[in-house]
Image 1 (cartoon, helix red, strand yellow):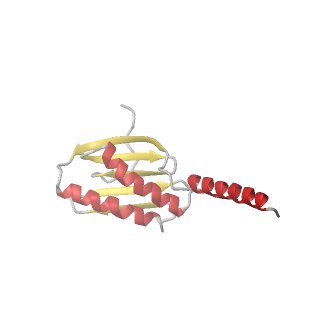
Image 2: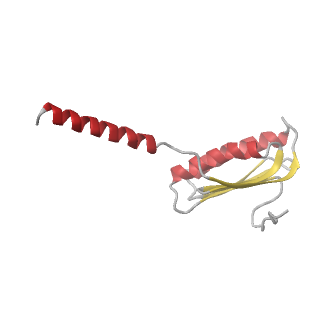
Length: 142
């Protein structure tokens, strides 16, 4: 094989492989909607501490939970209830990445609010100061 053909093939394969790496990197989940609810909490309060603990624990549960987990953090009146659910066809890795992203994004979209539901194409995350397990959510229409 001539060096010209070899060089051409090498450059083609190199450019192809670099474009593949560009498109396979982790992307942020696809945001759909969010809904803020509940009262506000005070910064640096026990509730905020419990919320941070809850939101930091949910992503690790996503890696071993088959796409769903619920948990609570703290004691009344500062208890936080939280859950996530991932779409059934996403991998544990994508589920964990989505829940990790949602845990940060939720508090940015609803700062200092005690309740939030945030939806992405890949997962949803919900937390509240009210018991949310086995209850029908309130209407999202205002």
